[in-house]
Amino acid sequence: MRGEPHGEVTELLLAWSGGEACALDKLIPLVYAELRRLAHRYMRGQPVDHSLETAALINEAYLRLIDSSRVRWQDRAHFLAVSAQVMRRVLVDFARSRKSQRRGGDCQRISLEAAATLHKARSTDLLELDRALDTLALTSPRKAQVIELRFFGGLSVEETAAVLGVSEDTVMRDWKLARIRLFHAMKKDRAHVG
Image (tube, rainbow, N blue to C red; front, side, top):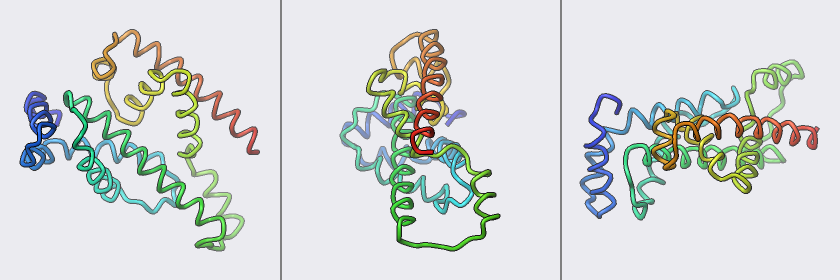
């Protein structure tokens, strides 16, 4: 999508919002590369034993996006922002499902050494980050959106500013403050659990 004119994507999004079903068929090839980039970005942060593949994440997000035809798309950046939110929801739902299975569902025995390796190789827990973002959104919704758009959505400072209707300086200020607040919230969450 970076090589495609952004205007064409915006036109197709507006047409799709207006009820033109064929606009979606033209839109998907233009945005697929961006959806794949978003999915790869999300999947990089998943534990090494994560069984959901990038293609499955894209497909699930695509199905949920099709159901969101009532969204009044503004432009490419808005589409990417909503796509990032949808992918985050898919992964959180998947993580919750796996966590409930671990509490008596599909149990697998592994050695203590393997468990230690998995624990060390595991990146930030998505459910923990999701809780911290939800908490941040209660007091500072825009800061939470900045994190979601920049970190998960991969949007630039300029694109994030356009989506949120604020200046680039405001985005950078929110970005810095939100990261600090998330770090402290996740640290506090770990202390309560541990």
